[in-house]
Amino acid sequence: METLSTNKAFGGTQGVYRHASSATGTDMTFSVYVPPHEDGASLPVVWYLSGLTCTHANVTEKGEFRAACAELGLIFVAPDTSPRGEGVPDDLAGGYDFGLGAGFYVDATETPFAANYRMWSYVTEELPALVAAYFPVDLARQSIMGHSMGGHGALTIGLRLPDRYRAISAFAPIVAPSQVPWGEKALTGYLGVDRSAWRRHDAVALIEDGARVAELLVDQGEGDAFLTDQLRPELLARACADAGIDLTLRMRPGYDHSYYAISTFMADQLHWHAARLRRV
Image (tube, rainbow, N blue to C red; front, side, top):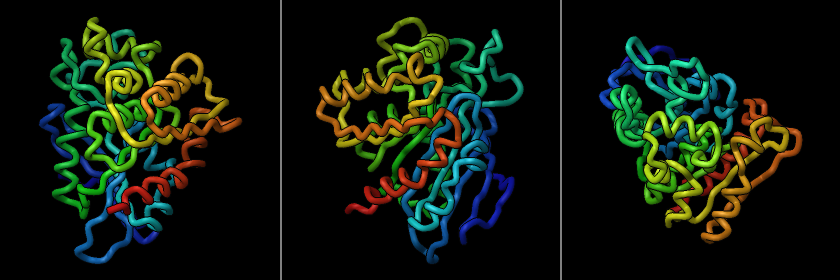
């Protein structure tokens, strides 16, 4: 693992790192904030998954999470959103919602994306093992959160691995990618035309098919330009109600899809995570 930068912040260390990924066959860059702590301590870890067009840098530079993480003793990890590098296929039409910066946290099965676009394996297997080897994380105390496409990733990963994550939350997530244009494009391109294969990467479909967690938290701006066509939180609310999952859906008047909104509610969500990560 190569250290690209480190900076002291709120008594802890914000670092950016790069390594050669066996999952994606590319170099991958990610950021880790380690709060101040006693030597030998093992700390809970929050995984943050970013949205379309983003890298690790968006939340690292604009998410305003470090003060809360320092106060609460949380390690905060932000991976990239897709493989990158020479030879990695992109959207031939040049769209922002597929290809580079838009891995959708799936392991692609379709040519030519299957060789590199293995973000599910990267986020759930390879990166946790790497982070645990280099940082003082307690893998018995993990939680996951994300924004937009990353909210989709956080919800689907959390629903499929309920024994791993003690808390699952999202900002403006794509809750039902099988039913919206962003998701239909991405899932067709990465997984093919068989829509039954998409259900394992669709939070609403997973809940309909029996996935269960105790609770979920979502913050959604009412001024979000993507609310009606791409995000559709009402579908998640209905699925959770039918399944008996305690969903806290907070509709935020006037807030949009940007990091202005995310940073506003980041500390609140981290306090929610910390309360659950402390439970025995």
